[in-house]
Length: 196
Image 1 (cartoon, rainbow, N blue to C red):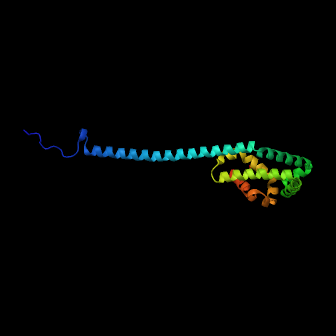
Image 2 (cartoon, one colour):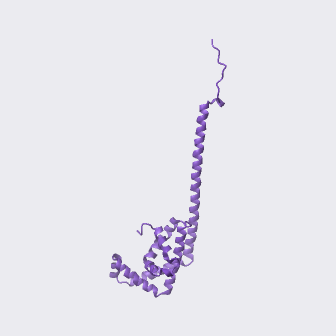
Image 3 (cartoon, rainbow, N blue to C red):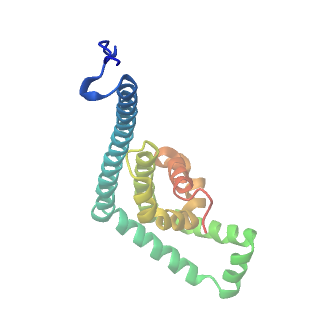
């Protein structure tokens, strides 16, 4: 008869788990810890970006309130009426020609520029609106304002303002804050593919 071996197995067998089992468990814990750490980092970055976007949106909303309450929107509205009144004085045949011919459109806008030059109050309104849009453009380019919120609220306004007053701004750019360049940059930033 054989006697049971008095030699015990050498190695760690805590809780009746072999060395290989502990090694496997250690590897699993390491992987789970690593995945958790990486996930935590991604979550922290996501939360940081979200908080930054929230701050940009808040600042943009502050500028929207400024637009609406400090006279900029009113100046823009009066300029739009002024442009509409001018267009109504143009004979229908000339308007149709200006819609299809770049040269005719340029001539029409030059005539409009001369009309603006005769009205100092309109010049000041253009200056005010350019100032506001330059401020908004700097805010967007410095990532202090939300580009998305700015585009939703101001894209059509900026584009229509430039369509009507762009040639006047270009011809008088030396007299405008920032020389009107920031306004053009804002237009391109909000609508990089061009107006639809």
